[in-house]
Image: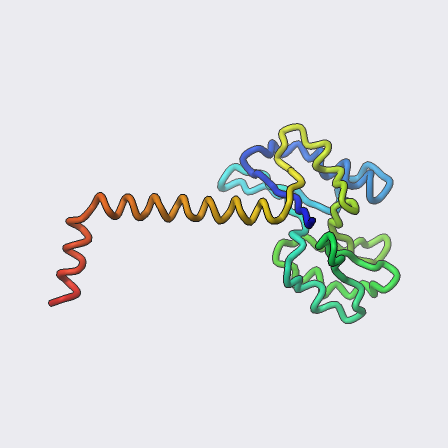
Length: 174
């Protein structure tokens, strides 16, 4: 079963605990700047959102890596970096649509969220449950249901406004 880290931006308080525990787990030090996720502050909409690897189905980082250092585990779906093969060219950093690939100036290699091998520490320590580790199929089903609900609302709203619909059709006929 493939799982993913789901972010609920409405629940995130911007406490940055996720960055702290990530750096401890993956780098052995309490240094949020070395975390494999980044809490980004969007001041215009008053939200702070943890940005992390989305384990893209068509991962551009994997496709562009000249050293073939980035691969996907077929069972878990996790995209990971083989640090022995990484040449530090940063091409994956440039193409990542989520800004989730980081270059570590100390190791001169890239780093990214690999979901702690299937047991993400950030999720465990998120007090507000803004981060959840969920089944990918369940997320897709939830998105499909939400899309269907929105479509249903649009259809119902349109059905309640027959005059506007009729006026629109008269313009097209004439």
